[in-house]
Length: 141
Image (cartoon, rainbow, N blue to C red; front, side, top):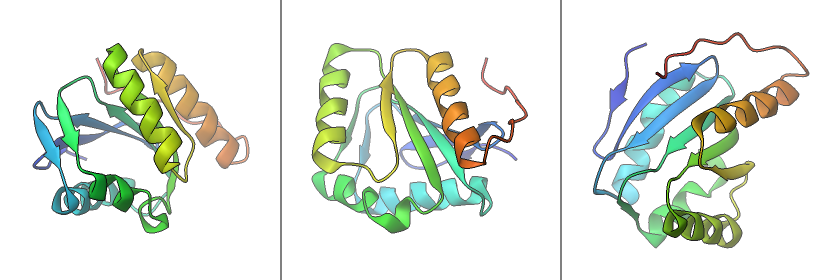
């Protein structure tokens, strides 16, 4: 499936059941963008459980209302786990605050390395699928 570009991010299938979300530079996420991004994710997930790798190594802002919205159960129905790749201490501090304060319903972890994030997501998916090995489809250079 072709990548989907929204107002604030680009979504693609990284490998089987792992969706990559690359935030766009200077993106501002509020309620309309949450809904738009959720629709893109659901299109790629195709009704199946998935894990998300969020590449947040750019400058972006997310409103309080958007954070509260994405923490609702309807947004996490198929989401098995969330890995967020960051590249600065400031992003790590903000990410840890968000995880502790908003308590995402799905396991969520911060990483500084894409491969470590993917390995963690694969493990979460395999446990969810009862030990079934996932077939890799590496689409990330």
